[in-house]
Length: 130
Image (cartoon, rainbow, N blue to C red; front, top):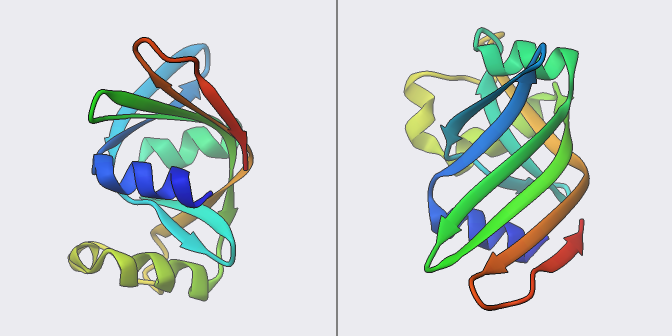
């Protein structure tokens, strides 16, 4: 798990794919945090991402850094606890201008049934189950 976390943090931006009906939706994200031994991401409940994950929690994350890339397929499970939200916002204090643990909008999800694939040109992909 640490390798996945480190890669995503180093990349700075990753792309989160969700599904809306039969249409894939991809957008850039930048939050990833470890809390209680799980990898978490963050969004707002008012965003389409939240609504899409409520219908279908399957997602995929992709990031590129230093000639290599990662794809993480997973289910994203909401964790509505104050502590999980606080941990994320403490890790990303720049978000505190838009989000707060108690605002009713901040939403964090942890990755469940995650499979990470590390790839680079000329190398065999490496698959890790989280």
